[in-house]
Amino acid sequence: MATKQQAQRRAAGSRAAVHRPKPQSANGTGRDHDAEREIGLDALVGHAGYAVRRFQLWIFQDFIKTLAAVDIRPTQYSVMTVIGANPGLSQMAVAKRLGIERARLVHLLDSLEARDLVNRIPSATDRRSHALHLTTSGKAALAQFRRLAAEHERHVAEKIGKENRERLLQILAAFT
Amino acid sequence: MATKQQAQRRAAGSRAAVHRPKPQSANGTGRDHDAEREIGLDALVGHAGYAVRRFQLWIFQDFIKTLAAVDIRPTQYSVMTVIGANPGLSQMAVAKRLGIERARLVHLLDSLEARDLVNRIPSATDRRSHALHLTTSGKAALAQFRRLAAEHERHVAEKIGKENRERLLQILAAFT
DNA sequence: TATTGTTATACTCTATAACTATA
DNA sequence: TATAGTTATAGAGTATAACAATA
Image (tube, rainbow over all chains, first blue to last red; front, side, top):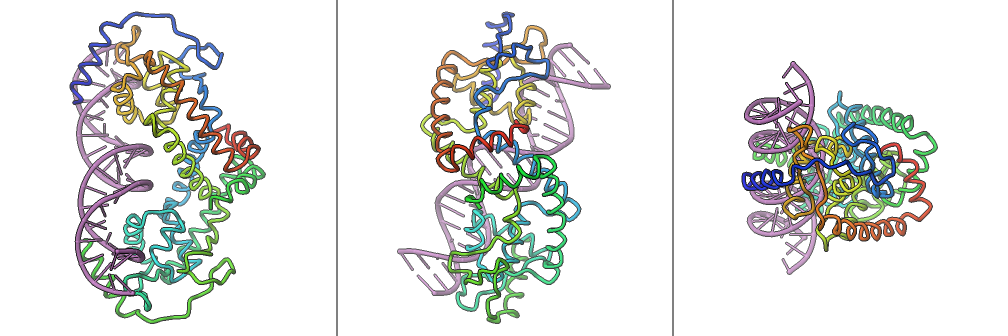
């Protein structure tokens, strides 16, 4: 399959190896392309989704870097935070609240449980479900994670500005 | 491995199957947990990353849904838009501009080329690289994608408000 | 030596489906 | 029959490393 595609590509190339004048970019700069700069985004500039995606990449990378010493990723942090604030929650409840697939939460909890941060305790009222709790060391660890997460949040404020960060939180409050 | 974890889980369960009064949530609501509502997010509320992640999930899902008829995903749209605005760009240049791994761009272009939307033409000046162009049908298709993407963008404006959307674009302009 | 495009691998994440044990 | 947790699989997406052709 890949071989076929490659063959087609080469074939298409050999009949089209004409050097044409480079067309102007649609953003009106008219600079050269492969010069590594001034590459226009055109319609992408007006799309909230594109900006949000790039911002999320930056913010998650900073979170991961800032909490690298404790080896905690954003989703793990969110799971521990919700369990810490609502002990006894079932896996379904946590999954629904955070918008995580319940199948994925299984593995997340497996790793948190293996690190003795979270406990699965059989529910007394429904033997199908588990009541989730932070362990003693999980509570202590979460306190530290929180301090590091606050540091990360300061990075965000430095990056986009204190007021902009607050405005952003206001605008997106409906999605939490 | 999974079997071992399961065994540990059951063991831990059998010695901890005590019914305790449900602790209050940390956000002070004090409601029941598994009642499917009023589950506190605690520290998560103050984290830009969490709000941004939830928003991005929503926005990408709406984009995918709105452009489902033409089977175009956000990344494919961004690649076609940048090539359309800067014809002749190399794969490296596109990858760098959009923050995509060059290895991943290979597969993205394979599928766009298979659909006759994009062409890889051997560069006249550097025989290692390909000059990327939209095909004739790719240009026509992109015009349609753009109309659908504009419709999606209206959904965003409806969801968070016209002014908020514009404020968001301003705040995140540095990340594009 | 370095870079471009490619292939390959691994790990994360999303989306499903199916199984079990309970309800 | 429906639900909670689990297992499995497939597809995106991210992160690397290595290779051939070329610079």
